[in-house]
Each structure stands twice: as structure tokens, then as C-alpha cells.
Length: 120
Image 1 (tube, rainbow, N blue to C red):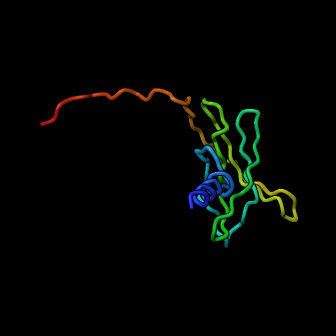
Image 2: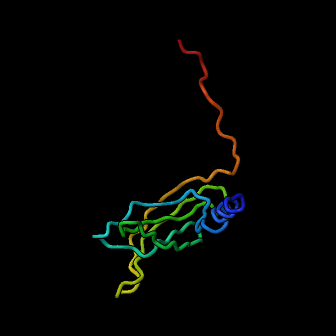
Image 3: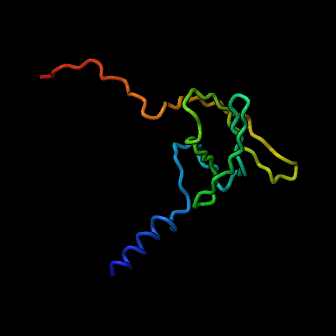
């Protein structure tokens, strides 16, 4: 019995996980199934361009889901556009949308509390 429990535990740890990621993720609202559906998203920051495949949701809608765990700490100014690559007209790309964020260093010290006082 102990061997069976060990085997099931090992399966759960080593075999069953199919996707692991660091996160956080850059995402967008899903494109409804009744609307234009992108096949990928183009993310540009500085001289870098990343192509992220569109994530298909359970209902068939599509959205952006790009793992930011790979990025170094710093300030990022992105331009994100949706792309449809299977169009008869070639690649069709939306107007880019700007997005900015700061990725803190791992273990960065959070700001200290301010305005500490006793309340009655």
C-alpha cells in the first residue's frame, strides 16, 4: 500500500503537470467567438518583438496570455497588437495599444508603512 501511495505521489509531481509557468501574465479581454479572432499577439518593447500565440479559452474565444516571468526587472513600455495570420489577405494586424509597467527585482523591499498612529 505504501508503494502505491508513493507511486501516485510521484505521478502527480513528475508526470501529470503539463504546464508550469512563473507568471505574472500580460493578458487582455477575450475576443468573442462571434467577432474577429486573432491567431497571435505581437508585443514590442524597445528593439525586441515577441510573438505570443493566442490562448484559446474553453468557450472558443481568444485572448493574450504572455508570461512575464522571463523578463528582467525594470520599466517596460510595450506596444501590443492582435494579428490574424490565416487571412486570405496575409497577416492582418490591429492598431498597437501601449501598455507600461515596472517589474520589481526579486525580493525587493516593499515601502515602509507611513503615518503610523494609535486610533481610539
